[in-house]
Image 1: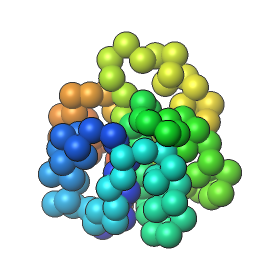
Image 2: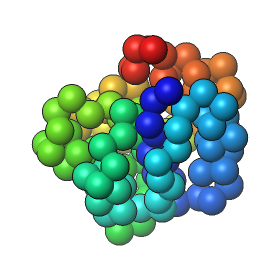
Image 3: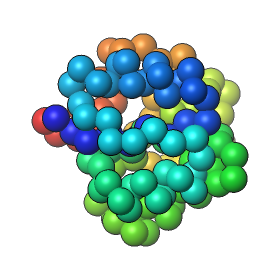
Length: 119
C-alpha cells in the first residue's frame, strides 16, 4: 500500500480522492495549499503526492518544484481542470510525474498511480 498525501484547496475534491484511494492506499495527510503540502511531505515522506495545480498561498507547481528539490525521487501526480494545458506544461517542467483531469474517475486515477508508483 502506497502512502499518499492529498493536496487540494477543495474539500470536495480531497474527499473524492480519499474515497477513491483509501481502499488500496494509506492516506497520510490532506492539505489545502502548497505550503502545507511541502511541510507534510517533509514530515510524512509519502510514496505519492496528489497535487492540485491551482491552490492559494503557493500553487501546486511551486510546491512540486520545492518537493522535487528536497527529494528528487518523490512521486507527484498533478490534478488539473480541463483547459489548463499551459499550467500542465509548467507542472511537468517542475517535475510532475503524471496528471489526472477533474472530474476524477476511479479507473483513470488508479491507472495514473500505477504508472507512477509500481506496486
